[in-house]
Length: 195
Image (cartoon, rainbow, N blue to C red; front, side, top):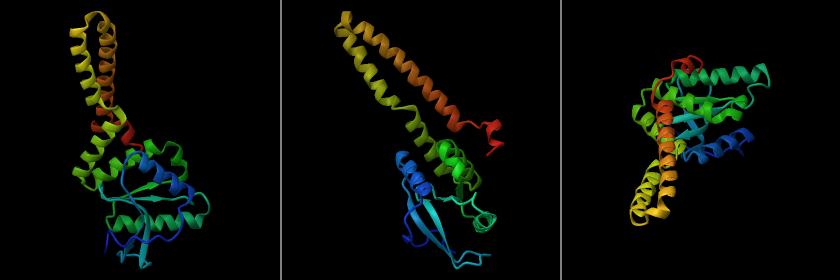
């Protein structure tokens, strides 16, 4: 079994696959497309093509774009999902209705797959990346705040109002950081039941 087979470009991406690719780029997540998995056990096919592979997170992504077309398409996707599960292939599955809320669906499903497959290092990497991306550059804002305090000491009349506004901004950034920490590091039992 080869979890990471040859990368072969077979066709142009569908609109949904293109959208997912653009989303991954916007989140600064490196990925490969059209990855081939060879010789999977209990599979009638000699190989399977996976839509995306995230090498840094060791996770695959399948977009089931034709899920709503016919019963045959659904059954084909179910068989593919069963084969991946039997071969312990960590995969996030996305459907057409998920594209409108892709950030929420992808993030939550990715965390669940990483936890289930005991990919702790990758999970920690992803959570810190999300925390940094979603909460803004707290470090840069803190440096600016320190410089404004120094400026305030040298020019107390003009700098006081600006330093106050900067202090309020820093408190807001700390609040955003805390909210992000809760979102990405603490378990939310209510939502985990629905993923």
